[in-house]
Amino acid sequence: MTQCSPQHVADALLAARQQHRTLQSADHSHMLNSADDAYDAQAAVARQLGWFDINFPRYWKSGGASRESMLTHAPLPPKGVWRSPASAGDFPFHNRYIEAEIALRLGQDVNAQDAAILDEASTISRIDAMAVSIEIVDSRWIEGISAPPLLRLADLQSHGALVLGDWQPWSAQDWSQQTCRVKIGQQPVVEQSGSHPLGRPTWGLPAWLRHATRDGATVPAGTVVTTGTWVGILEAHQGDHVIVSFDGIGLAEVQL
Image (cartoon, rainbow, N blue to C red; front, side):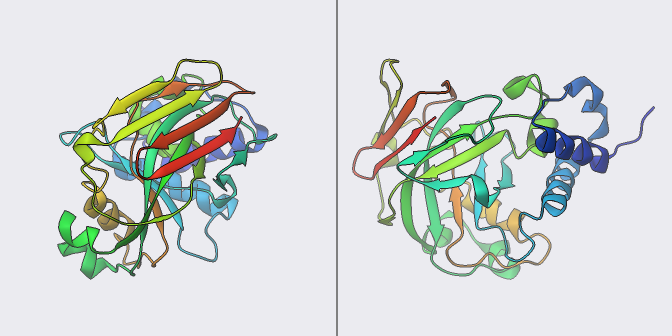
């Protein structure tokens, strides 16, 4: 039986990124036994590609399917974070799925000691701004978003790129009534209200900060986290123009 090897998974993902190809998950699914293994693979790919050699990761994704599910987190490569209105140009994608999200920005540093005792309310007090965001979901696995969960997590939880709308000062919202609209190319508009899987985009922030500081790091002011989709995962294609809007907050758009 092959031993658990996050480094082998990282090496495979690195080659897939460098060669712009996808991998058979069956060849690697036995190599990860836990979320910690998947996070080790994430970190190894980041080290080998030099994503965060100088600074703490400035952009993150965090979320989960429900409050009962495991929340997962991933630092995002800065080259794939764009301001709206954005154009993907020749940025390499295998898939182009769309998640409509709210991104939040820290206004204060958070160290490991702080993170250990934060709850949702005290974390909200450290947020200074919010913005509409579009995550373009992609995968280095042939099975895409149907690949085994730990392999998706190792692959930055199937991250492709992130588009950020204009920042707005943080203000409390009635998230249970918040309306989101998504227009993808010629497809009908998708509209959802009060549909965040965790109820509020702020609910998972303490878990994200504890993860980000687990090795004693400090998350600096200005760090951004995007917090989960309000509309599930919607399929898009090269050439589509995507517009995401949240009533009272703003919009983001990207040309694929």
